[in-house]
Image (tube, one colour):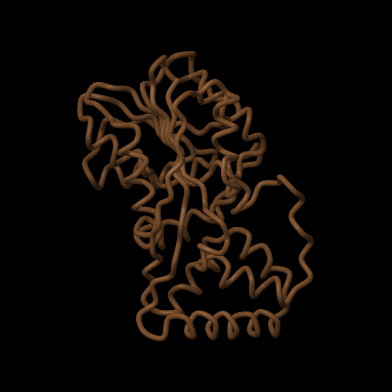
Length: 275
């Protein structure tokens, strides 16, 4: 849902929204973060890099597991990292460092980290192959890496309920093939191919399901229209009447599938590898 870790800084527009919805976002992303942590097997005393971490996860969870180690939390947006620092202070986690940087030009020496985590941003990197090579470069020999990307649209109704409705009502230009986007990395085997080309070995891919437990359709709509960058961008081109039509149809399609408490299907792929 973030705007991506590209050369262009996403700015401060989403900082307040992400802080507001952090608990709900972390809940739906939790199973993927847990699988990433399981895959990289953090050990106390290690130095670990968390790429494009936004408000701090899974880097903060990893840091709490390795009190004598260190986690470097990165993101392109400095304002997002300020929230990560606030979250660390609230949880009394002190063994972290934050760094605003681009994954395609990591400001770290070769063979510098024991493990790398990267939760839900790979599909937005402008050059995924270069990003994978940079991750390989800064990882120690024998080091572990794990990342997550969204699975196919059919398994992510939490996205398609809104974006599908927008696309049905508005003439949006199609995303060019291979361009950054939510489902850019869902093709089976694509991520394995990218990481193997970068030099990684023992590449594995696991499907991880989750639920967006918004409780109500209104909460779901409010969150998506505040932190979903593609949704915010699309709705900014709609007039008041069109926005209301889209809102009404989203409420209808979600309520039809979830007539009671709203807990919307989500699914991701977690890819792990070693150097």
